[in-house]
Image (tube, rainbow, N blue to C red):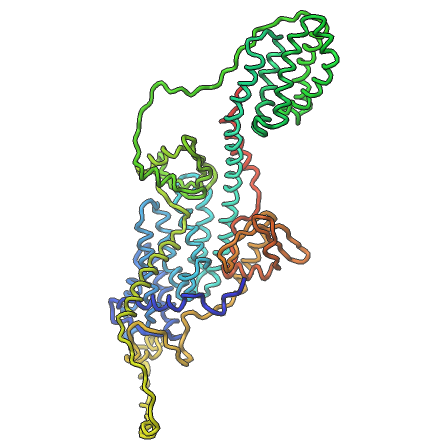
Length: 634
């Protein structure tokens, strides 16, 4: 992976022009739009925005940044020069925050938290334009994950998720003054926390998939077992102890092997033959000839039964408890004992016959939207108490089988058919969230519209005529150009000391122009919109701590020329501080030292999505509760 800090990504320069185009004139003459940045003016702008942030937080207001900045600058005697792209950036983020805060479903706490991040995000983006053109930007990823987590407002999600989120937001508000590395460091720590939380829920989902797979196999295997037992034994007169064995532990073993192998498996076929042999043994031992026939076969048959009784094979005590009654009855039959026989009843399958049903309708469109969802998509469910729970599709089923949804906290499991989910969608109790990348989707949409406007504006510009080469006579006849002396701003008076200190001499009025190419000047006070920034020590330390939490089996996303690639940590050589990652096929794709990996993580080129930390206690509780719901038929 190449380091992209030296040059901006493709489209970065165009982004500056799009923001320039978005810069409508401010509703005050105390802010003057200029085409380029100056260092002194930027320092004043940062100070003003920091004061605006403090004012809004203290007053608990939700004004947008542009309006608050206009009010803050109202007492200036010299207009504050703000670069057009910077003003367009403020207006654009104001627009997105207004849209986010006006959306339905966010509770008051979520609205307050998101509103409190408006000024920090604007101040950050002014220093790092990659927020707009790089989806892997650390702050942009943090906002996506934060918004997704705040969509859940149930008591369970508040208890598990929001306490940690509150700490991250508080640190951003208090610690981020001027250095963007402080904001990035918090986002790196939050990334590890989000990955750990997703880890826990992912393990629960995996266990649910495994249990659901077992349940589906069981629904196919049980009829096959009942059919075979009824074919071989139903209606026959057999000793009561033998019937109890066949319909008890032997039936469980038949079901397990049928689920594992199907009806074509060799072990299943051996079990069926042993079932037939057991019934023949009991029936034919009624006379001496039959007993002589089976006496030599008895040890072989018992050996096979012991090997095929898989339901208790891992528990020696349970195995002996199941075989002891069988051995006693078979030995009694071989001795010619006259045992009480009972007629073997035919086993019955549980039938879900419907005698009366209420027909409910759902629109094809709602059903199609549900069917189009893929595993991993997010749904927002309204609960009975009026709160919301964000759930992820863990198992997508077909026909009338229930889908399985797991909440963000891992505490809630929902099972509904596609039809029931479509009813919820139509009834307003279900909302489709998708992958949860709110900021990516909105930024892409807004910038796409601006790009269309920019292309239209370019097409309307007159084509400049090609320059004609000058003759030597024209060059000789040209008079020398004498530059006018520079105008020196008057010294600050007692009436204007603050203004003189805040704002350097503003650029001359002739420099204000319509949107166009960025002028590259040699002004030492000029500031590039896309100036590269090295990774700070704070960011590097936060990234190293996040990497140290990554365990073998954890997953990362790395940015490659072909897009994002998931990699799993396969080997960690602590003595050499080297980490080896493999892809889904187990092929090594990345071998890197700890410090360079931290550098990539701090730049957003690597993202931790799974720390590999196990949550056995939570998993065991979920598994136990599910297993209690599905007891195997006796």
